[in-house]
Image (cartoon, rainbow, N blue to C red):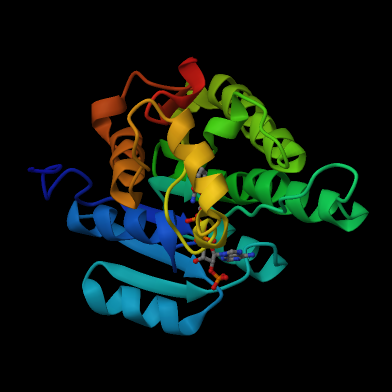
Length: 247
Ligand SMILES: NC(=O)c1ccc[n+]([C@@H]2O[C@H](COP(=O)([O-])OP(=O)(O)OC[C@H]3O[C@@H](n4cnc5c(N)ncnc54)[C@H](OP(=O)(O)O)[C@@H]3O)[C@@H](O)[C@H]2O)c1
């Protein structure tokens, strides 16, 4: 199967958070293959070096915690930026009776507040570039509830609200804001969940396509939204969920 053209994002600078593993890594690699200059952000240096080695001329790496003021300052100080994949996120699976109170802040801080702060910092260099596109990584859980996932669902529903409001507010500046909502993808985050056979069966039963999404399936949606192909698409979301949420 042929993918996007290798010049789809030529002359564009794209920042991808959480690019060391999983979905973020796939987005960074695909953006680089489509000609973008990619800034890949994560905390684990070994992951970043391995990623950069795959496409050294198009990937620079920042070893940063996206919740740190240092990271936000670096984003704010960029000369120009055309795209942001606001991808970092986490989950603390538990039923409400057992959920630790501290999980509430951990999930909301990373999945929601850090996306807002990263996007806010990115607005300055995106404005300098004359406009651009932000893709917030959401989830199918932004549209449904699921057992053990109250915090995750709450945070991802918030990501949809953030996306719509930012998209409306920033449209006059030529800044498009959208989200991507994947179903389950096998990544380091979900590997332990999907090793539970009962849970895996539940997931496959819920997905009409009867397969997991791949990191590339999700990256394809992100790349479309980052590119001029989506020039009239803003304040909305693309579900890459194999039909989960349509039932
Ligand atoms: N996998 C799925 O099934 C699925 C489905 C729907 C939505 N999503 C969403 O997709 C996004 C990515 O998920 P994933 O499964 O690819 O996650 P993952 O496998 O856990 O990878 C997350 C990446 O983010 C980095 N990261 C985490 N915290 C960070 C921080 N504070 N600062 C900088 N980098 C940080 C991690 O590297 P370091 O730890 O080295 O920093 C890693 O490279 C999340 O928003 C998730 O909610 C995932």
